[in-house]
Image 1 (cartoon, rainbow, N blue to C red):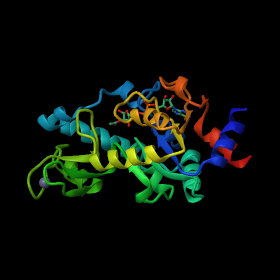
Image 2 (image 1 turned 90 degrees about the vertical axis):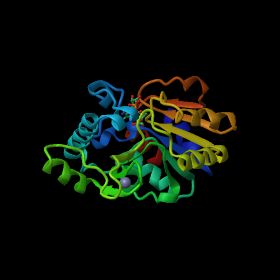
Image 3 (image 1 turned 135 degrees about the vertical axis):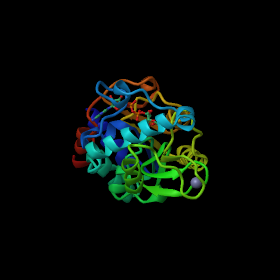
Image 4 (image 1 turned 60 degrees about the vertical axis):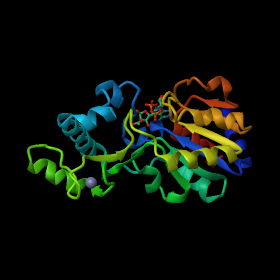
Length: 247
Ligand code: OAD
Ligand code: ZN
């Protein structure tokens, strides 16, 4: 019955926003953060301060990133990504706001001007001091050539980090602004595959609801905001979209 409701909501949606978390990418083989086996159940996150102040932490961060690349570098978009790309193409979604850093929304064909990456992107790196961009392959070569030591910026000597937002690192201002604008203007807000515990990102569903949008939460587990939602579906994201968009 839940899927019938979702089908109706999607059919009436005119300027929706999809807000995605790691749960949309688990069927692509990429683990989420907080489920059993999730990244933060295996490794403590390296916060921004530790990255900046410790060469050993920078080395460790890059070791983890390259291990991810070996394990999940070839991941391709799943059913959730593809369904959202289609809804965007049909003009039902105004945009996608993602907490994910895996690049799979882009890979599903979503153009940059319709995608907001709140936590950045792990598929390339930048110098934290001057902003120079570095490709992962370049970083990896240097890293391996110097006994797994993280390289510094060629231009200014600053630390090179994946273009992601770590705990303690300022949120990207433009992404926050664009996400706020999309959220303020949406008629339906779809929160998909996120535990909704990380702020400020988790504030967007609340803001959407306050602005009068319908709030839909699709997640395997309950979230703190389920009570506030107009529709809650505790099921597998790929299954939900397959059922809702083919019926
Ligand atoms: P979490 O790991 O906190 O939550 C993912 C949610 O998706 C969990 O509640 C799972 O139950 C659910 N889930 C997993 N696979 C699913 C599936 N196939 N179908 C339905 N539900 C599924 O991940 P996020 O909420 O994305 O930030 O985490 C938020 C932020 O915390 C991340 O962006 C990351 C992390 O620290 C940074 O790295 C800055
Ligand atoms: Zn630099």
